[in-house]
Length: 382
Image (tube, rainbow, N blue to C red; front, top):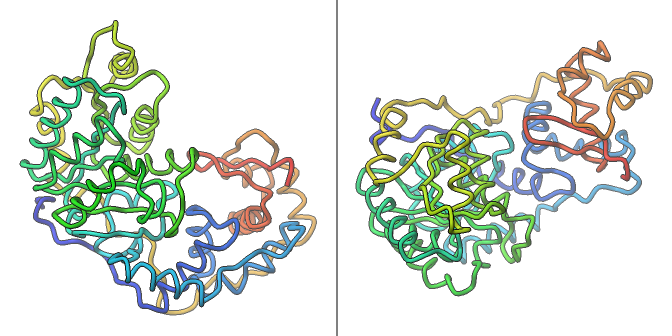
């Protein structure tokens, strides 16, 4: 199958499901991974919402967990509609297909613009905010060539390389992944560019609520959207400590191709890209290098249908919760060091369902830290 012409896969959420999903992801201590585990265990967001108070209490919460109300969810949906945006669920056809399969993929994305941009295979292009003229020019060349070859160009709407990549792919289609709400572009000077994107062939996406001002810790989350929704990420100019390298690292963890443009050893903006090349990134000296390397990945349907679907009937999970002694064994097996869940199962000799349920309880009580790769650790100061 040619992925460039493949029909999008997925099942549309009902409005009732969309409201329940929005309530669940907006509730306290429910992140993308917790959301997934709750759906997997209880079978639906509505059932999970009803279970949250008991789960957090069993996990040792010192106060009642805040659960987003139905009226709050309705208001957010109405805000999106007035803004010309919509919420796309992870199992729906318009959700970026490759993004579905990363750890911690957002259950819902707020999106505004041309949703077909999310269906085509994507390539991320990121780099220095303080870009050189030649760096910005080369990023634009790569973006333009990738766009003309059938790829959607993804970037983070930042100054410099991001801006050059977006502008060069306005006609063919570009996605701006945002760290704040769709109505809070950063930097503000790129607000006009953002309007060009969603009023044309492009799309803006965010997992944050409307009105959310981006903070420093929100940008790595934004970077994972770029890496996860792309088949490969091209880094053009990046210092040794930069968000672009975070995007490249995430792309590698997700099994995506990582490209780097070499630069002068005397230019601090090239130190990061040169280090990526030392670590095995693919070298890019012409735009054709990127398209040629991506071609084998984009010609076939490499990603299976979505996993996050609610069953038509109630979940079959009806096991009683673990007793206090089993719960204590699981808590004792945890510590400040990140641990694989399979190791906890082997160590405690308890069933996987019992371990996952207790971890959910601890998570909702704010007593669990989740780490990359599915590792967990105990929060020492709940």
